[in-house]
Image (tube, rainbow, N blue to C red):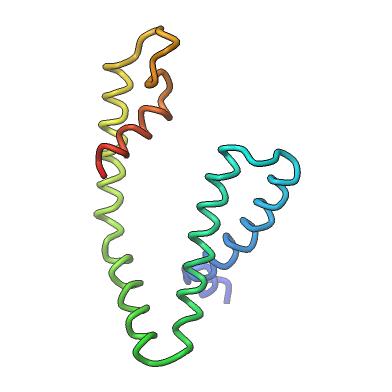
Length: 123
């Protein structure tokens, strides 16, 4: 029974979105509206929208077919997305090494800012 539960990715979306909603509420209550709060809220909102897609499957057969097709395409693209993530990290690290200096006005002084810039350039 546990192997079946852990094998279904919808269970991970359910647990992550529910616990993420509580984390967002507690984070906002303790720390207010910060950049980290916005990042966590955006991730949780994507998970909640995935739950909505799961609920759409129960309305009709054509909608269920379309939602299942989208799920299958995402599952088939997993290996490509892993390679894309590695390539993005590779170029982000190269920019970090090339553009690192001690200038306090440098917008690329941290690894996170460089990764943000690299992600923007890939889009």
